[in-house]
Image (cartoon, rainbow, N blue to C red):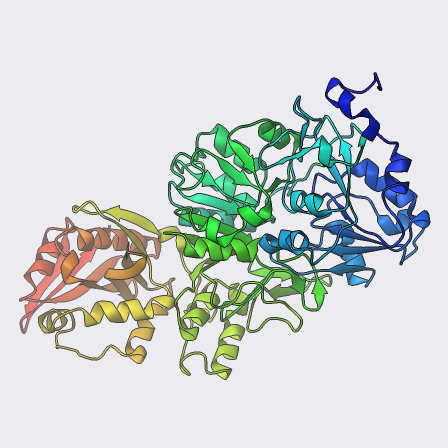
Length: 631
């Protein structure tokens, strides 16, 4: 018995080996081995493997995600064919070798990787893992990484463990017994830490848009990426959030400590954070250590779309590299260059899509800067040749850039194109529109909002707000968008003949594209149309609009209002009028004017009781003409 061993390992002293013997005796030339992934990589075992590489040539090394700084090829003297790596997700240390044909990439859904080994389709000779010391019953915890490690270790011919007291003891389906470990070495290196770095303004703005989609009591998933994890900083005003995610980072700890994440309203694994692995700082690792609130499971469970879908309001937040105008998402490659991997995106997009009130969200900056400094759009007419479609047109729901939110699910190609152009960088919108016209995706006369100086008129997000009505419902008030055309048509078609006569002075029956398009493509610097939007049963409707348009005389604008018959007498028109006055002042208007039929008593009442002093009011042929000073 080795008296230097910790007490919990005394009964297993015969399994202790030196680092040399851990590699020499358990790995043979030509073997296929698996090395524990992410921040749980057994660093000391890996270093010894590299050192002894010449004596065990032609070893195939499997990874899920390699995050260490170890360079297998340079450390081994630059011999290209000494090791052959096969990555299921390409980490930074292997990216250049995959690009240089010195390593392989196997694209698979994360949920399906374990089955590859448990079914016997891929044989593993040895698994090198890192675990916590055993408890008094002989169980070691896999710690911060369970993902594919546990299923592979259970399928491997031999298991060699690096037992490290600095590895957190995590709970859930996260244990391996010492009887199932063939050999172990003792180590005490620090666990790899990971940081997404400081957030820039673009990431922060995208995160705010995403946060606006997340309701109280939602269950969230954050994929690997700076933007998905930036969202956690924007959720401090939410209540009773839950977590079901393959991975999470330090931001979740902040939300738990601030009482935002409670998991009390989850419909599956109530009171529990469910994950497969974590990547972050020592603070995160201390948080998950022996924490009964956090359960780790292999990814064939956490990423099973059927399991995910059982969480009501499951929100999936993932990052894309590019998205085309029809909603195809590329997340793993830059053209023919493989960059990362499929990971759990598809699993969670489909799981959230099937969840009650679930929301799959893809995020990306609208542009990227090439090595030569050229700015390119990430919203593209078509995916670059060689780019993989990770999320299909049929799976896509939300796409978010720093310019806004596009909702594509159930939308036609024409509607999708307009949604995507609306969240592209303004410098690229005209080019995207030309491609869409060329391919007959949209109307041949389709236009974009153009300002008085000939540039794209930028949507004034600052005017978005909410109004609680007398009936207790809350509606969104916002400027009109080019994508509102159909909803504006539906609002006008909902008016009966008398309503149309009162609004247009004639019972108009035709609200075709050519008539409505000018109402949704406005110059926000001179005109304003505010719409009142309600979401019922997942469907958005415009129930009212208020507008002013530049008149022929400088500093004068003309007013117009439309309200759906079911939403009248609730204060909407009065609110829109006051808000338009505020915006009109900002745009340097001094006077609002308008014409109202004498029969339109409700509109006359609103103007007469508005509190604004009318400096013009006369009756001409059954019409009241009015004007008032904004100041």
